[in-house]
Image (cartoon, rainbow, N blue to C red; front, side, top):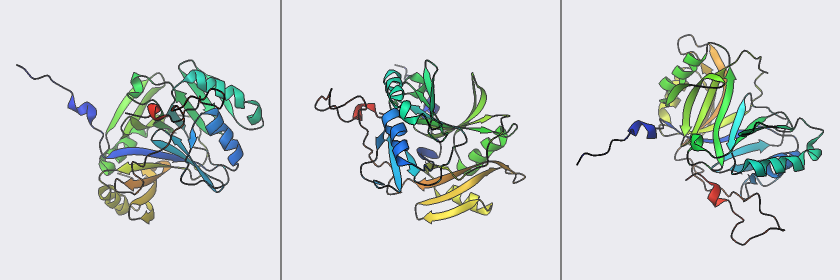
Length: 291
């Protein structure tokens, strides 16, 4: 009897195994609570960063980190999967008036909802679908607009320095580079002619299987910007490997799989549960995780 054939390459991830968090500073935790928790329906980390100097917001297995300082705006889009767009729309309507004096907006596109936080960060929310595999709640991608003519150089940067799995793809928005950054997660780079603001220090966090190899290559090129601790380092510039020209700047907080917080269990609440419709056993959104 012939064995069934499978496309084993479909399960490859490359060296990047996690897109852990997006970090942007916010000046007001009250407004951040209205947007991220009351509006988007996400969950504040109950165990870490519970004071007023920072807040961590859980999204399935990932997080937003929101230090309380002068606002930062990600140059791009953070993509989320949420369990129900209908429930999301209702929550966004409920916070509109209280966020009226901010940059908060939301636009319903039918199969996704675009939102803008009180300080201008763009978060695009999708319903679960085949496109996102088994993800019911999470952060499947972060997309960056990059200058024309840079995609090939950015692809080579992640290929050669990180042994990442990269693919040139195309959708309704045109051609873009997808860098696999974990199970069901990726970084997207899309060429744009729109002028971008100066980089303001926001960052993303990734985890690598081979942690030291990319470090050696980045260090040889003078790209390491912080030696954080035994399990973490940082770099900011994505460069042309031939000329050294900076193609795009986004700080990467790079962690090892031995980092104490890798695969840390995160609590996610069921955002439709209230004191009025409460049902025992339905507080937690464990049903809304990946897997």
